[in-house]
Each structure stands twice: as C-alpha cells, then as structure tokens.
Length: 402
Image (cartoon, rainbow, N blue to C red; front, side, top):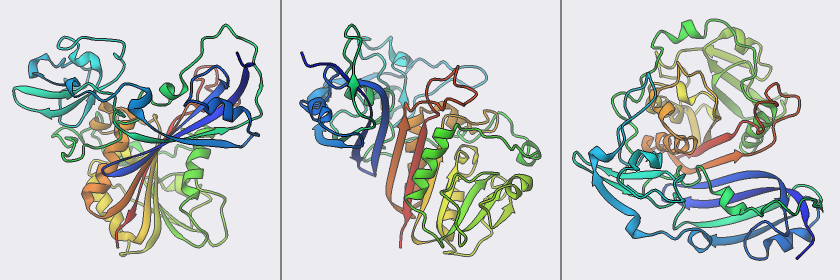
C-alpha cells in the first residue's frame, strides 16, 4: 500500500443541462491522496504535483456511481405523497419539476441505501404522480478539476476508512439546479410569493443594520465571482444594496449606484457613487434609462422579491446588450420576509428558480450557476464553535441578449 499523504483539495465539477452551464465546487480539508477514492489514477497524479497544481478529467456520472435506470421512473397515486410541513407553512403539495425528500413517498417505494437522494416530480396530475428516483446527476457528463491547495504531508491515521471523494462532491444538491428539458418547473403557485410578514417593507428596514450577515470566507467568494465580470470604468447597479457591496477593490473611476431600502446603510457604503431608496415590492419599476448599466449585481436579497419576473424584466431594460446580471445568495435570510417558495426549496433548487427567472424573461442568454461548499469557517468568526464550515455561496448569472 502506498504511504498515506494528506492534503487539502478543491474539487470542481463542470457540467451542462439543456438551459444552463453549471459548476459545483467543494473543499476537502484532509484528503488521503493514496487511500481515498478518485477517478482511477487521479490520486497518484495529485501526489506528484506542487501546491497550486491541478489535474483534470472527464467522466460519465453513471460510470462510477449509479446508472440512470428507466425503471426508477414510477407512477403512484397522488394520495401516497406525504403532505406534511412545519407550522405555520401550509401542507406541501407535489408540483411538476420540483424535488422533494424521499421520505415523502416512502410508503409507495422501497427505501434503500439511496434514501438521502431526493425524488423529482416529473408530472403532477390530479390523480397520479410521475416521479423520478434516479440521482439528480444520473446520465450527466462531468468535467472534473482537482486542485492541490497545499503541499501533501505524511498521514498519521491509517485506521480511518477511505472516503469516496467524488460521491461526496455530488451529494446533497448537485443536479437539482437543472430544469427539465421540455417542461417548466411549477414554481409559480398562488401562494409562492406570500410572506409570513406582509407588513410594509419600509417598516422592517427603517433602522440601519450595519452588521455582516455572511462570514468573511463567504464574502470573499462572492467578491471573486463579481470580479470575473467587472472592469474599471463600468457603471454598475447594486440592486437591493446595503452598507456593503461585496465588490472587488474600489477604483477611482468606479461608478456604482445602489438601490436599496435604507438610506443610512447606503450612505455608509464606500463603494457607492450615489444611491436610490426604493421598495421594489411596492414599485418594481427601476428609475433608470434603458441600457444604462454595464452590469447589475444582487447579493443575498433575491429571496425577498414578491414580483421577481417584473424586476428581472426591468433589470434587462436598464442593462446594455451583452452586459451581465449576477445574483448571489447563501443559506441565511430574514425568514419572515422571504417569499414562501424560497423556504420550500433546497439550496440547489433555488439556483434553478433564479435561472428560470432569467430564462422566462426572454432577455438573457448564456445562463450559468455556481456553488461553493465545505470551506473552513474563519477562525475569528463568532460562530466558529457552532459551525465548522463557511456559509455556502450560490450564484446565477446571465448575459443580456442583443
């Protein structure tokens, strides 16, 4: 057996669905390059690399995990869908294209070792449901990139069982951000955009909140994503802005306009050249000329919009052709102000929802999503004793059509 060599890795999986391209990135602190399971030969290649090096490969998900099986597409009576939810939300109803915990149909299927996989409702009829029990990535072609983040060091604990790193990369979400190829997901029910607190948003946001809601690692990842699309001299709209904009280093010719709910917060934002106070849930029309901005960003706020398709249409109007809208979020929000739909969805399904916002507007192309999970929480973070990992990052972007 090869000598144990331990190193931190980032694994990135790139893949495509009919409507978008996707990248899912995960961090693994202590990977045994000799014993943990990768693509054949990948661990040996990583051991030969210096810190900062990477190896790449292509694979079909079915070749190393569970193959797509047509017999896992099943029809069951609608009443066998378990309609339970936590108070005060109403019972969960099956909807076409949506994902649900496998336990929701446990009485109708044989639960097995894949019990943690979600089940997808392919068609919700009045009497019957068509469901898919395959893994959300089944049948997908994946491009893998493994990056060595530090020099490997000798391992010490040979008693630890080896891990399947690729299985860990594809667990709990990847694949769920993909829309069905021919049927729109039923996101837009009558209650989807209701909220627990329907009082005016101006009351909720009346006092400035000059606190960080996301940890430093999460904020750095968001800045890195925005940095890919922003250049000096661009005119940028920070939609639903606050006292921080999570932008790359400020430059003198940077022209960032903030639109948010609290003037005090935006006055404290050093990135903003100017700002507008506006409640988009009261008036979703943007007070700007057509094709005015080179980019629009929206950070950890999209979940509060009650008329998102109208707002996205307005964003498209004020963007220049070829410019991008970039939306980022994490798993933290004000629960009483988030739309009901947001609270029902898995994190990865939320990326599908936002992609559908852009796609259904008819104004965006080149849709992409990205996720970052499992990175260490900063040592100085106040939640370091409670949460081992940094807040995850989820991003969706698209390019304004000409």
